[in-house]
Structures are given as structure tokens and as C-alpha cells.
Amino acid sequence: MNSDDALRVLATMERIRHFEERVARLKLAGEVFGLIHVSVGQEGVAAGTCTQLRDDDAVYSGHRAHGHALAKGAPMNRVMAELMGRETGLCRGMGGSMHLVDVEHGFLGATGVVGGNVPMALGSALASRLRGEDSVAVVFFGDGAAQGGHVLETFNLASLWQLPLILVCENNGFAEFTPRSAHTVVERVSDAVAPYDFARETVDGNDVRAVWSSFGGFLERARTGEGPFLLECLTHRLSGHYVGDPAAYREALAADEWRKLDPIVRLRTSLIEDGTLDEAAADAIAAEAIAEVEAAETFGRDSAYPPESLTAEVAYA
Image 1 (cartoon, helix red, strand yellow):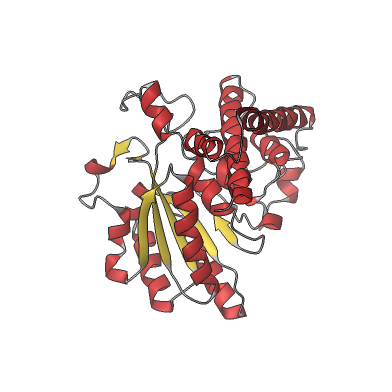
Image 2 (cartoon, helix red, strand yellow; image 1 turned 90 degrees about the vertical axis):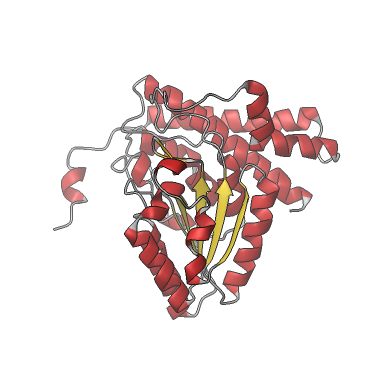
């Protein structure tokens, strides 16, 4: 990761962090609808991967998708409008948080079905191979999804057909409300693909440089016809499973502990120490992100709700 890449990644993480924090407040205020799952604390994974991709690379996400969509290039104002149920949203206000889609930028969807996105990414990887292209498919999933039969079937077919598929596991230690130790004896998701002969790696997901390096290596190989790959990113979800979750099952991190884990603080500090940034420039990056979030909120609030007739127009039968 060179200096330009690092600055772009830092800006992306700041955008995601401030967007997610604002969305959580809007949800509690009743201005954002549906179940909302934010990724505060996990920004290093989205930024360290999606900023290396092209628009023709397919990305699939799960229920915690805002950060992946933003890092892949989805316009923040249209993401916000979608969460607020407005017609200017990515899906005209009809999809909401767990059904974000931005075909223009290769973000082919979020889903509330645990692991339901994994076989769809397999299809995109197969399509790229059949068309003779060098585009790749990337899918994000949590550690809990790795127990699903459809996920294991994807592991098998991806390996059998040697597809350009990069599976990125955001292992935050919880499958919704359940710690990993309560649902599997396999400590690392990267070990779950061992029988399928995957190239695989487990990294500190809060060290965005490590994420960037490992993912970049897999991406380069996938573009030349190799695959599949699995990158397990050990990360931390700072809040509960959803906005409003009392999170009684979790132990809160002390402020000093979180500072050591925070991917934004870690990258910002390293860039200041190596002379790439000074404090004022780093603060300016954060301020720009906040301004973009405020503009997105205004855009969403000023947009109209979709007409009732839209439900009939977009129905397929």
C-alpha cells in the first residue's frame, strides 16, 4: 500500500464510520426504517478490499452491507436515501438496508439470508470465467455463515471449477448473538476450507494494511485465472447485532482497549508517524467525511417517498 492508497483507504474508513454512526442515530429517531446493522469497528475490511476493485468486479454482501457498498463506489446520498425509504435511493426506497444494490458500481446486492449471497457470488465468478474476462467476484460473510450447507457447497464447486472467487469472512466472533465457541469446534473459518484445497489466509482485520496486502495478492492471482481464495479477517463489531440491541451478551471494550483495535486510529497514527499526514490534514479528512454524511442526510430528507403505484410497477409475475 503506497501513500496515495493509504490516504484513499483512510478517507474511505472515515466515510463509513461517520455514515454508520449517523444512520444509527437516524434509526433511533425513526427516520431510517427496518432492521439496521452497522459495521462500526469493521471498516478496515471493507476499505482494505473494495477500494482495490473495479466496477466490473462483482461484490456481494450480507445484512451488514453499508460499508461494503460505500467502499465499492455506491453514492452515499443514494445509499442514505434508500435507508430512509425515499425514491431517490439505490432501489427507489423499496429495498432498504438489507437489499442494497448498485449495478453501476458492481455492488450486486446485500441480503438478510445468512450466507445466501455466497452461492450467488459463485455464479458471478462462473460467468466471468465463461466470458473469458479477468473480472472477479467477491463475497463478504460472517463466521456464522460458514456452517451453512449452501456455503459448503459453494466451497466445493468453486474449488472443483477453480473459479475467480474471493470469499472474505468478517469474523467478529459472533453469529448474531452467539459466540463462535457455542456453534462450532473449528476456531478459524480458514480451516473450514482446508479439505477443498483453497489458498487461504487469516489476518488481523483491524489492520487495514494487512487486509490490503493479503487481498491484493489474492486479487492479482484471481485476475490471471487462479482461484478460489478465502481471506478471514479477525475484526470487532463495536456495537450490538442491530441498532437497538441491548447487547447484554457482550462485554464492553474499555476505551483504551478499543483505541488499540480501531482500524481508523491505527492507520491515521501510522500515517502521521511516517510523515504522510499531520494532525491538521488527518482532521480535514474526517471533516470532509462528516460534511458528506450531512449532505447525504439532507438529500434523503428532502427526497420524496416513492408513489404507491411503484409496488405494482416493480412487481414481477
